[in-house]
Each structure stands twice: as structure tokens, then as C-alpha cells.
Amino acid sequence: MATVDLDEAVKIAARVLEALPPDEFTIGSFTWRDAEQTWPYQLTTDRSLVARPGSVGFELERGDAAGKLVLFAQGFADILFYNPRTGRERIDTVGLPDAIDLGQYGDLVRELVALFDE
Image (cartoon, rainbow, N blue to C red; front, side, top):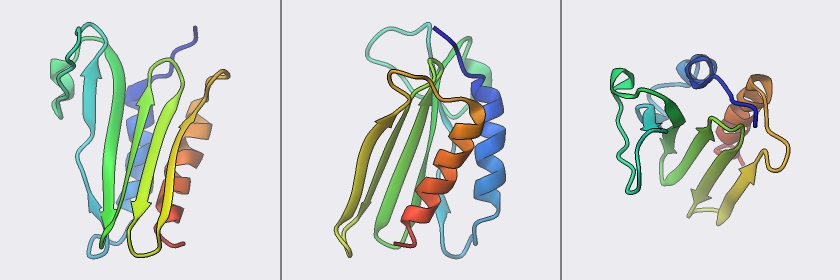
């Protein structure tokens, strides 16, 4: 199974997130899961504590709306979004059975951001 470079994925997501108006969005820290860990997994925001990244994710909020995107090293991602004001929600796994690449991950980050404007 192919793997995605999660360190590169963070750089892609950071470029998109840094362009957001800080007075409108709350951007959570990137959280890492070490693939060497066993259940229950412990997430950390300190990349240096992760020997072999298994996943990385972040949370995004704007008003009452909230979203989360988690990319797994195997090339699939979980995207979650809910806006209680509009009732708009998205709960999806992308990249199964065909893994996504870093370009598609960047598109997914932008797609999550766009959900806040709907």
C-alpha cells in the first residue's frame, strides 16, 4: 500500500490555513498519531515525539461551525464538518479504495474551508 508523506501534507495544509482571516477562523494545532502505537492511540501536537507518523489532523472553527480533517499515511482522509445554524454536515472518508495524493489532499483542505461559506 502506498504511503503519503504527512510532513509534506502539513506544509500544504498550513499554506491554505495561513491565508484564512485570523479574526474569523480558529485553527487548531496539527495533531499526530504515531503508527508504532497500539490502541488506545495518544495524539500529540509535538511532531518530534512521533517516530513513524500514522496520521495527522487539524480542526477548524468559524462561529458555531466546526470541521476536522485527518489524513492517514495510507492515503485516505476523514473529513467532518457541521454547521448547526444551517444544518449542513459532511462526514466522509476520501481515498478508499484508491489512495489520494498530496495534490488531492490540498484540494480537500480547500474543500473543507469552502464548507464554512455555504
